[in-house]
Structure formats: C-alpha cells, structure tokens
Image (cartoon, rainbow, N blue to C red; front, side, top):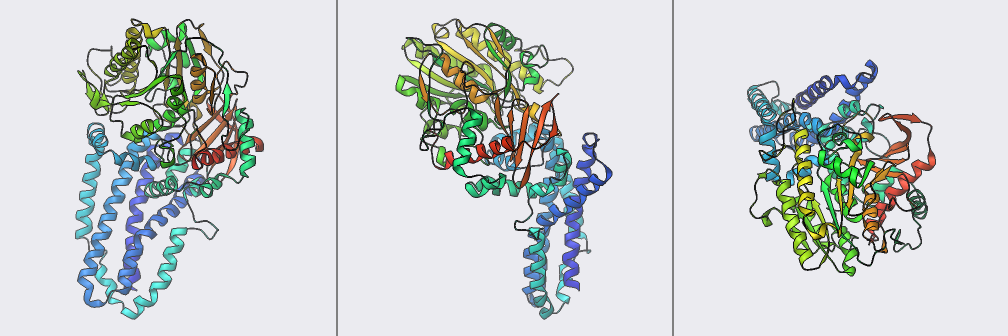
Length: 634
C-alpha cells in the first residue's frame, strides 16, 4: 500500500544515515578492535539496528498518526508538514552523528548526558566549539545543506502518495502500525524495554559504544539522570537497605552506629596542636597521573610538583571518584562519593545542609571561601558552596588587574595571585581560614598566556601537555608567593586533581585513566611518598587530620595516618561503577550482571565472581542514594 510504502521508505532513509555513521565510527576506531571477531562486528550492526529502530519508531509516531487520520482534502498541507518534520529529524541525525566523532575523541563514549549539560552554558561551549572544532562544524553544516537540498528535490519519498490509499484503509491500519511502532520503541518482549545496556554484548567497550545510537544515548542518559530514587538504584542489583549499610560500613571500614547520622564518627588528630592550622585545597582541572613524574608519569612537565613531592607528602596511587569536575569537587570539599545520575553539586536536596569543609570548621572560627577563575554558576558551583556553609565565592567577575582571560576564565596565575592576596588578608586579621581553589587553564581549547613556560617540543602550542606545564608553573608561583608570608607556616596545602584529562580505554571501566596525582604541603612534615591505594575522600581526611583538631565528620574515607585506612576506591564511569579493593575490582551497571576482575598492568582480567565485593559495590551505590535522598550526609 502507498501509505505503508512511504513510511517504510522514510524509515530506511533515516536508518541509512545512522548506518553510515556507525560504519564510519567502526572504521575510525578499527585499530582498537583487534580482539573483535567478524561475528562480533556483525552483531554490532545487528544490535545497532535495534538501537536505531527505537529512535526511528519514536520519530515515526507523528507521521503515522497524521497520515492515518487526515482527510484527503488536507493532502497538500499534511504532506508538506510531514516532509518538513522529517527534514528536521534528518538534519538532527546528521548533526548528532557528526558530533559523535569529536565527542568520542574527547570522552571515549558516544554523546551522553554531558552533551546536554554543556548546552546549559552556551557562551563557554559556543566559544569552545568555534575555536576547537571549526573543521568539524564546517563538515557537518555542508553535509546538512547537501542532504536538505537532495531531500527537498527528491521525489523518492512523497507523502502525497499516502493519500492514494483510501481513508478507511488508512484508519484501519493505524492500530496495527501503532502496535508495530510500540514494539519498535520497546524493542523487547521482556518485563523492561530495551535500553543502552542491551548494546553491552562484548567485553570490548569500544565495540559496545559503536553499537549504541547517539541520539538514544543522549535521551536515555537524560531520562536516567532525572530519575533518582530506589527504583533506579535497584537496576544495579537488589539489596535490603539495612544490609546495604552494613556492607558499606564493612568495605569502607567505618562504624555504622546511628541510622540518622550514618558514618558520623569522631576522628582523633595525629597532629595535635594548640594552634590549629588553616587549610587550602587547590583542585587542579583534568590533571592525570600520566603527566606527573612522582605519580608514574612522564618527566619534565611538572618540575614544581615533583620538587614539592620530594619535600612534603605525595600520593602516588590516588584514584578519582569520577570523570567530571563536580564529582571531584564533592569528594574534596565534602568527602562524598559519586551518586548515579546528576552529582550532588547539581541536585536539589544537597543545596543546603549537606556536609562540607566549611560547615565542619565554622564552629572552630574558620572563615571559608571558594575561589574559581571562571563563572561559578557553571555546574551550579556557586549555589552549592554558598548553600553549604562557605562564606564567600570569588569568581571571574571579582578578579581585578587580570593578565589573561581564556574561554573558561582567568588564567591560573591570576587565580593564585588573587588567592594569595586573600590569604594574606586573613593572616593579617589573625583569622583562621579554609579555602577551596579550583583551576581552569588545563581545559580545551588550552588557551595560555605568553612568555610563562617553555613550550613542549613536538606538540601544538595549545595542547594538553603545555596546559599541564602551565598549571604546574602556576602551582610553583603560588608556593613562591605563599612562602613569603607568615600564613605559609600556619597552613596545610593540598594540591590534587579533580579527574584525569580524558578517560579512554577498551575496558568496561578504564581504571588507569582514573589515576591522578596529589600532594600535601605543610611546614615541618616529614617527606613521604604514600604508595597505597587512595581515594579523594582519603586525601581530604588526611588534610583535616594534619590541621591538628579532633573532629566529628561523616567523610567516606580515612586519613592515611589512621589504622582504619582501607585500600578501597569507588569509581564512576558514566552509569557504570567499579569498586576496587586493592587489586580486585567489581563492576556493576544498570540491568547488567555484575562482573569481577583483577587489575594488573593497567588492564582488567576477568575472574570468577566475587559475590561479596559485587554486593559491596551495589551496597555503596544504594547507600549513597539513600543518604542523599534522606539528607543524612551532614
């Protein structure tokens, strides 16, 4: 029938766009598919068609309704309207498929919730796109223009033909077609409709990503990020709440005594003093361990950090909570771990009465500040810090006499100079202070001031290597200034990354790309390189230990000087979690059977299921969501 024929041709046209995008992605990353058989490659395209059909079935619902129910006299209006509707979706699909390539290059996954989150900041993202992806944008727009011209001129799809089918036949076909589209959207006869987990058929993560559909991944990630609560958490695996708290307490080695204040306990300092020290946490944007010599990285990029590491306390086996700044900020400002979906910095129930450094130290007379070189509205940082006890947020608009501004804000040297002035003011007023500084120079498009560093040979001027080297320059400048003032001897300084520069690898969770550097600088400390597995909350607990106060807090980590310190890290990669205990790793994901691995030589080797560790991972995820939902982390 003409009616069905036009819908089928529309489906095939849009499917062709998605098929070609998948073919190109497959060819582009073919070198990372050496262990993939021909059969698995074919499965990627078969399962991929399933993912594509979900999206296309949703798109075709409106044309199906209109073509089925519209009378013949409306043929010109309805046919033109549907053709425009399909053209819009054709252009969207072409754009998303093109955008997949630079996104994959940056994050090693198809577009997901990050794709939407960055759209909240059009100024920064627009500038970044224009500076970093001119060629990609040009190619995309040329393809969209050509596709639009061909589609509008082509007579292959002509929705007027659908009206050649008598009205009563079209009306009778509506119900079976809607049932067919419904089945296409669900793509499953099971209890739950198909989702991105149905593309995870291989142990090679890259082929799984190729199998997915970018538009579906974006939509599903948005849906998942907004759907918090017990129902979404149970998709990782079922566990009773009481048992979850017991398992979480066991793996974290923290006593669970009061259900209304879980994990709240007294932590006795190992550095008792009648004059508690100030605390400064300098968080480095996207600084991976592979760039820093003392954490096993290359030589020469970070001479200032390497010098400080030899003179003070360094962490060579530190792993980040996640792959986003808000995960690192939460870990290092409050000692929390990464919840599924949106991070607590952006969630509504954690905008007040959520534990933080500032609320902890305020009763002891500490003045608190968050200092950032960009706009603090980004990722809701300003609201979260001010709502959780910080006295002041200093951002780009508050900086005076700046020397250089990039897409993301003032340069790191301007940041440290501003912070130094602030700390000097505190010191002159005899005010104790706690401050979180957040750098931003090490961020694409890597715009750096001139005449500050000697650029690395063999790489582009605007490269991550030079950005790391400049970040190290700013760290050196900060301590050069600090050591000239009295506050240096009275302060514990932490220099630590929020996450790695980009996370890539073929494993379900590329663990080595969570490896980050950290060091603690404090006058009089015995130089030490701590080489046991450490989490970001552990670094925070260690720094608090060193200021010299006995404290009561719920931080989900321990000081390295405590006998309770465990070698455990919970890492989040998109919606997948990896719980690492020493070198054993349990990986859990929504609607997927948990797996156990042994980590060695920067690779995951499958092992027999460690049910206890897998249950601990599910327990931690359950507990984190429950603590957030009931506002228990305070």
